[in-house]
Length: 370
Image 1 (tube, rainbow, N blue to C red):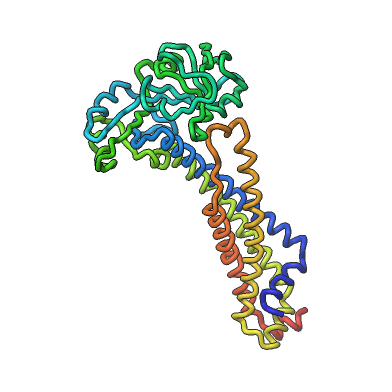
Image 2 (cartoon, rainbow, N blue to C red; image 1 turned 135 degrees about the horizontal axis):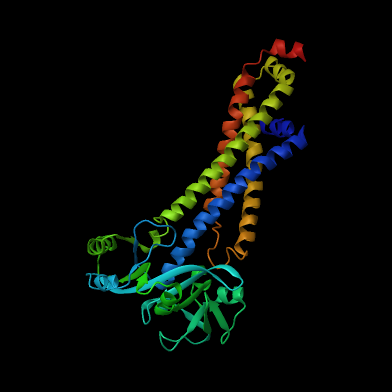
């Protein structure tokens, strides 16, 4: 019998305890998968939106939460005059409760800007003018609101006609309500205010970072980020990720002590057996490897359970009214690899001390005490 087979046989001696231990640490790893899947998915969803708009740089006010604080929309004039900037478009983004849907992204876009170019019309047609009291719905937003072209949509206390349903090429775009900037400014009571300026560079050899520095020198109190780094640099997102990591660390720590307790119990119950193995000539290093392998095998099995549970939870969350159309959870081999890596680390950490104790067993005393 190989050492690996011997290890598995030991784990199967107490199937109930083994299964409960696997479930316990599996729940911790599942929490890691679900929380990090949400955090990474949030960043990817908004990065996809910027790619769909072909936005290179984003201007926003320093500080604030996930949605930046408003600032005057006339700052875009100075941005357009910056060397290397091909176009700049004002954007006001709000998260509002719309009819029966608790939270939705509502996007007010500068009329005639490139922000409208990426919208592929599925049904209807875009408003004829910025003054038209009409909105455009992303295809996911239309499904959630159960609206079609020609229906009336109430935002705050104002009624708007649904002019078109579009495919925005990103989950954030498809889950949004889109309207002309002046309309959203009026509805939200923020005349002349925006919270983002989207910038498209002319791509004639200019360094995006250099252009961003020039714009920051012109606009005090604002920062300029490269589009795919906007979410990563957002204070609200950083707080969200930190909370997720903190919660995950607590779950993993609890699981580690749970596995360690199981391994100590296993060692105490098998003291006579281990004493006999040592008496038969097993080296103490081999005994140590056996116990550590048992711990790692438990945690690897728990890792598989946790990955399945975490992915399943992410799948359920992705279709809930709170998530649908706002972000698409991250599913990827990097997340699987991280979860399995954590499982192995937990197995090594929780198995080392019980294994070390095991190597100090006196075989003659262990055999007599049984």
